[in-house]
Length: 227
Image 1 (cartoon, rainbow, N blue to C red):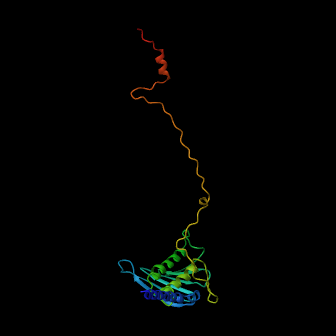
Image 2 (image 1 turned 90 degrees about the vertical axis):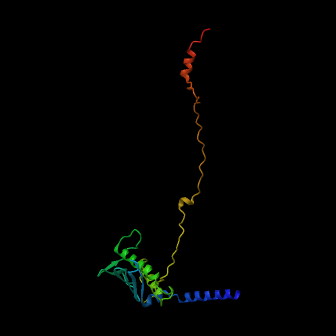
Image 3 (image 1 turned 45 degrees about the vertical axis):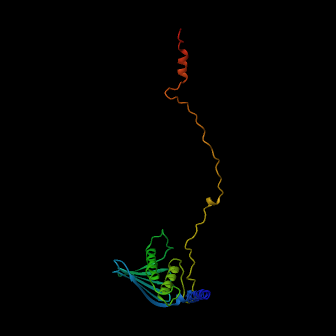
């Protein structure tokens, strides 16, 4: 039994080390050339087929997605200014990056940038076959394209075929813990406990009207009965 446990552990170590050894570098990703096509069933009970094609020639990445309509993005990650050529409904337009896209930024560039990256995620990375770390497989090719496009469109990184490429991998925190506010860092001073003043009320006589000063005067002024 012990030998079986150690053998299984050894197999896991070999598999993990092999995957890590096959992980493509930034240089391999940038200089790679490939074509891949990923299909899966889509809307209307699977009658519509979603299909995404990725064609890469070193710096030039061409992504075509077809659901009901077809849209093609052409992005050269080695060319300035940062832009993309989008062909939709038979016409081609060029969209240039003016600033980093966020939730408050509304522009055609940010709209088509979001569509491009989400299509690669939802229809490429999720349904592609193979390992993400292997650039010879469909999953690795979609992942390589996604990393280059993200660095180029989001971070404004312009690559070069004649220089050592910048790192395409960037660390991302899945669930960051928010930093405490300044108010939370200050010591809290407990306020003294104050007891409310005791309110006294006049006695209530059941079945009788309370006697006030005027009533007492009237009683004193009455003549005592004569016997």
